[in-house]
Amino acid sequence: MRTVIRCTLEKNGFEGIFFEGKHSPEKVIITVGGASCDEKSSVYMSRYLRRAGYNVLVLGFYLWKGLPQNLVSIPVDYAERAVRWLKNEKGFKRIAMTGLSTGAAYTLLAASLIPDISCVIPVVPYDYIQQATIQKGLSFRSVHKSQYTWHGKDIPYTPTDRLDKMGMLGWLNDARKAPGYGLSRFMRYGYDLMEKQQKPDARIRIENMHADVLFLAVKDDDAWPSDVAVPRMVRVLKDSDYPYRVDYHIYEKGSHALADGLDKMTGYARFALKHMLPAEKKYPKECEEVRRDSFRRVLKFLKEW
Picture 1 (cartoon, rainbow, N blue to C red):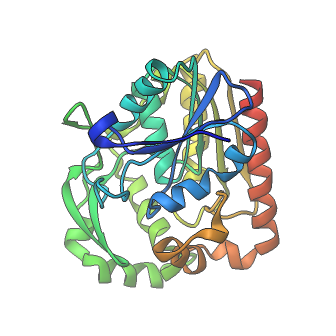
Picture 2: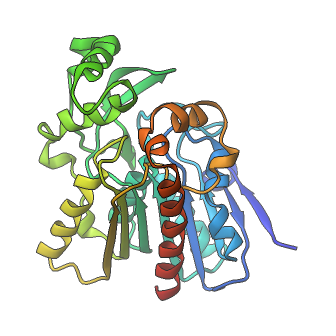
């Protein structure tokens, strides 16, 4: 029977669930969910990796019970403690990390700070840290802090006063009237505006990673500019003579939801899937094909790592 271990803040310094696998026993994969993904959603999203037989640690970084409920001052230390536990308590020598969307940014940030992560697979990622926000339903309010911390200190972020000045209703109204956006793409609208305001210090220092990396993105991403961020990150790594393997793919037709377990999603995650990703309605067949292809690419990359 497969071993399942629950890790807690009190006992281990992080919240997570470890699933033992029989395939590639020397490797373990840390997975994190995306924005609005609670514990159940995060576990479902790791399904294809667990079915492939890998050792998987599903790591919580927010929205799990006992963790922050908003993207405000989230410790990257959770990932550091998880890596230490996997090395010292479980004896793994090779540690990979993957995440989707907000989880992809957390993955990149963790790998840029923790050299023991030797394989990184960010799915629909973004490469700048934003100002923290508090969310209630579809409404957001700015908080003048970073989304993330490292050893108790704020990680540099790009401040924005747009929400403070416009309010959520003003933001939604502008997105509704903007050609090519509309209410369902209000997040992409906001990020496209912020692209012009990003601060150099807020960029995730991916060149500091010690890892093979596979980037996956979709063209004209409905949620945020993963299709802009991935080519930018590839250039950064090339220009810095990055010594590790780099691969990437941007799908022509697909949605931000390059994740497994969508059939199990509930709550806000289900709402977002149905109403905030127009590509899912415009290209339903292609979106499903792209999802399956992304799983194959990830598994192939892990096998070759």
